Every structure is written in structure tokens, then in C-alpha cells.
Length: 176
Length: 250
Image (cartoon, rainbow over all chains, first blue to last red; front, side, top):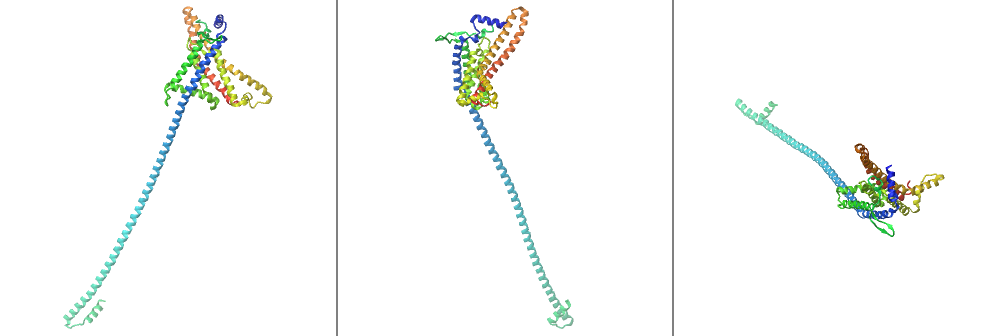
């Protein structure tokens, strides 16, 4: 009701429904061309290049930053790997050094012991030889003493003198 | 005037101009076109002037608008379609801001006049035809010959395709124009009810609450429609441009 009334009212005033009034078309079209044309120019010449530039710069920056991160991460990984390698190497070295020194110490102590032992054996042999010599000497002296003693006893007892050879023969036959 | 839902579409001559018998006066419609263009351009030029890696609020909004329209165009017409980006971007912003201006009381809605939407629709239509022939030559006519259709019904299908192609600027423009026109008339009618009911005394004022609520609801709806119609117009533009670039692709 309202619309029809209103439309009737407008149509009385101007004759046509305003959006369909051809009399206004030329002016509207002209101003649309001017304004939209200007708008298109401003957008395509100024605003869009600026915006795409901004976005491009930003995405470049992000890509660059990501690349940099990647590079730094690779570096850090390499450093870690090198460190681990060094550590393993050092451990291995330490182990071999320990083994080596143990071996060396063992060999040294064995050599020392051998030397000492051989020294001891030598000394013992020497001592034995000396003892044997002393014993032989002592025995020989015992023989001499016995001979002398015997010749003295015989002299005292029988007053005769025995030759040395006779005494020695008699003593050694007794000692046997 | 207050109760007349049509008078809001009335053109008023502000500066009378005439060239060769043609009335090219600067009207309220022209004023709002200038306002639309001036405000939008000023905002975007201001917002992008900083060119910051880290955007300001204004720049962020401008970038979001750019990405929104670029996404629409890229999804419909592929990266090749980006050469039409300035046109699509301008169309979207012009229609959106003009629609939004129309939501202010006493403001003129530029897009509620059929001549404006028809002009914009034909701009797209001829862009599609020119770009289509320029890029594909006669291959552009493959647009009317869908693949996989039996030969027997081919003439019929081609006829339908041709008709629908030439109906495009009509549906494209009328959709926008009619939505804006009808929405504004409805708003004005319900707003008018408030005034006329209030003149019937206390009971009338109490009853006027209903159309008031309706007007509030419709205002929200119209805001949605104002955005949505700008979006739909742009979306269809992107799809038509896709036809120009890939005529065999459907």
C-alpha cells in the first residue's frame, strides 16, 4: 500500500521511477566513468604496487630469515657432530693410552722382577760357591789341624816323630 | 517526503551542467561516487604510505583486503587471472564502499541505480570478451561448446550456453541493483511505519515498537547484504574472467 502510494506520488512528481529515469543516465554514466576511472588509476598505479611491494618484501624477508635459520641450524648440527666425534676420539685415545701404560707398567715390572730374580739367583749361586769354597777350605784346614794335632799327640804319647805323609794317611783313613 | 520510500532514490541536481543538450549535472549520485572514491583512495594511500615490514593497523587492514580479493581471484581464475587484479580490486572496493555509504540515513546509494550496476557489469562483460579473444583467438568460442556432450543435443546446448553468456551482464547487474533497491525500500517502509503509528497516540507509540525492532533487524541484514552483494559481484567477475582465460575448462 505504502509502496504503491509512494510510487504514485513520485510518478506524479517526475513521471518515472527514479532508478529507471533515462534522463539521469547520461550524467550518472559520465560521473561513474570519471570517478571509477580515477579510482582504478589510483588503485592500479599507487595502492596495488605499494601493497604487493610490501607483501613481497615481507615474504622475501621471511624466506631469507628462514634460510638463515636453516643455515644456522645446519652449522649448529655440524658443530655438535664435530664435538661428538672429538669426544669419541678422545675417549678412544684415553682408553688406548690407559691400555698402553698398563701394558708398559706390566712389562716393566716383569722385567724388573726378572732382573731382581736373576740377580738373586746369581748371588745365591755365588754364595753357594763361596760356602762350598769355605767348607772345602775348612775341611782342608780340619785335615791339617787333625794332622798337626795327631802328630803332636803322637809325639807326646810315644815321643817319636811321624812323617807328615804317614799322619795324613792315617787321619784320612780314619776320617773316611 | 519522510514517508515516501522512493524519494531516497531521487536524483537531485547539485551543480547543473549541460553539454550539447545532454544533462551531465553533478548530482547527489555523483557526489557519493566522488565521496566513495575519495574516501577509499585516501584510506588506502594513507594506510600503505608507511610500507612497514610490521604493518600498522591501517596497513594491516589494507593488506587483508588485498589478500582477500587476491585469494578470490586466484582461486577462481588461477595465477594468470592476477593481471585483472586492479580491475577486480577496484570493483570490489567501489561497490562495497558505495553500498556501505548507502547504509547511512539520508545518504544516497549509488548502486541502487540500475544504470550504474549495468555499466559495471558491461565493463566486466567486455573485459571478458576482449581478454578472451585476445588470449585464445577463436578458441574462446569453445566456451560455448562444453566437452562430453552428445552430438545430437549439441546445438541445443550451444544455444543455451550462448543465451546464458549474453544474459550474464543482466543477471550480474540486476542482482546488485535489485538487492540494494529492495533493501532500502523495505527499510524505509518499516521506518515509515514507526512514524505513522506513533501519530496515533499512546497505543500507537506502543505498537510502533514492533516496526522499530524490525527496522533494527533489517539494518543488520542490510549491512550483511551490502557486503555480500559486493562480494557476489566480485566473485562472479572472477568466474567470468576465468572463462576468458580458460574457455574450455568446464
